[in-house]
Image 1 (tube, rainbow, N blue to C red):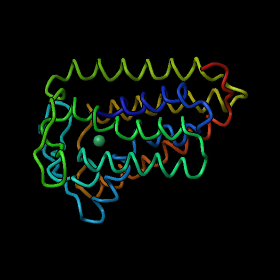
Image 2: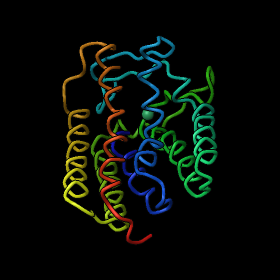
Image 3: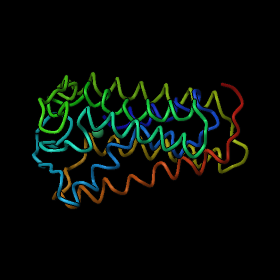
Length: 217
Ligand SMILES: [Zn+2]
């Protein structure tokens, strides 16, 4: 799943209004943010294979450290505890932990059975990617709901709070279209660097979030 994860990040603001969207957006993206690092380090692997599924040319044949259920739970607990240690904001810690593990659940819906339960364990996945129309509509709907929730909870304080927010939404929609309809990256290294560039997204979210006020929760 792609922008479904960002939907979780947006909606999280309602449940932890004092937490920056930088972390609320980063949490549900975390497994995909770790993944390119592990690819570049050579401890995880992926194959680019046109037609692997109707929606993605990627064959996720080996990503136990970023994408097994066990490790997702570990990252979730680590992220929640770290956040709590720094801020003492329990709600925020819980929402961040839930955000991290939500990634695995949403990927479980969309991926074919390539998600290990633990490193070396059996692989699972419901394979919504084999039904492109259902998956695209589901994901777009989630995205729209996430944006609506965030817009209900916050209001722009200045131009940046409005414009940078909408540019972010448009960029994500563009990435979603490119991921589902674009040509696959030429090699794994290029793919890894492209995925690594996604680290900019939580930073961007944190930026416009600082230019918006929480008005309701
Ligand atoms: Zn993922």
